[in-house]
Length: 463
Image (cartoon, helix red, strand yellow):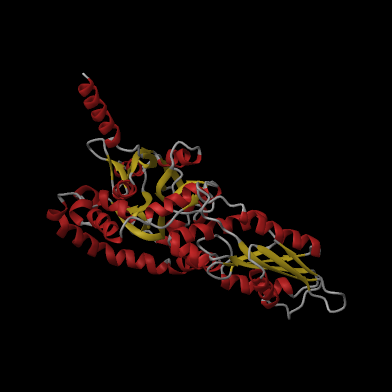
């Protein structure tokens, strides 16, 4: 009897020892009809580029990935309200940045305006002017809706819950044009029926798809970046290659009608070329406006980039008002990159930029002037007020919680140069010297100095 009991104990212990550890669950949301990126296939299962990508994420990180595929607006709401942990991939915009934090790039998309072939004779500029009765389809809450409303407010738009409903409405003659990603349109337009109906006539924009999480969830964003870093480049290319291969992306009956499509493209090419040339001036003006924003903005933090910061710097320091210059960089940033990876380093820079933006007033000049170096110019404040803001920057960044275990600490060394009167001779060198004093004194502190030849200079240190 004792021997039998002992055998049962050993068996039970072995089962307990061999039991698999519980896996974390990650709820990933996106559109249910955004081919080839994310959609529900004929078998009722999630499918697409982003689905394969996040399944690979789950495999390499030992995470159970569950997909919540809904209409586009509902996918944004799911992340915003915490029903999903991460949005599988979408474009950054100023409106989305108000409630989402974005991670590293996954893939680039191109978006075009598609019009019914009956409208080919109309010039692009005339169509974009909106002085006609034709309706343009967009996806509700999609970036194409936001972009078109902003850049072509005169167009008559009709919003659809998803891409599939929009393109079906186009095929049924309910709308005469629509805005869609080129990769999406390839799934629908290369068929005998569709080839006679719509063609792309105008490039709207190109953009980078990134995953996103609920804003101010820096720990989750950091964990996400670490996990994405584990997916090999070879596996990414395998996923993208599978879906971009013509037999997968295009309908199986494309080959027999391919010659017909090429002939149709050749016929329409000259007409489209004429439309494009006549609309070139307007297109360039819009492109210049977009390029101006891109040329002035640091894409990782949303702050002024180095070039734009220095363009504005002279006008901020050359007036009669007081000038406070805060120059600081992230302590031991190379150590962060070496130990956690560059994607985590990008998250750290992004979160530091967010803190700076939240602490800054609209009239401050705030920029990322180097890899991990930032600068702020403040006018019309007293010396004590500027010093207080320098101290607040150090304190808020010091208190950033970027990981659950607290092993990732972020601090900055800051130099604060104050001038009671503006001058064209003011530059960043004074603040730069103070920043290196802060580093020499132990880092994680601000060193401030009052520069005025007619009064006694003050030197204050905060740690």
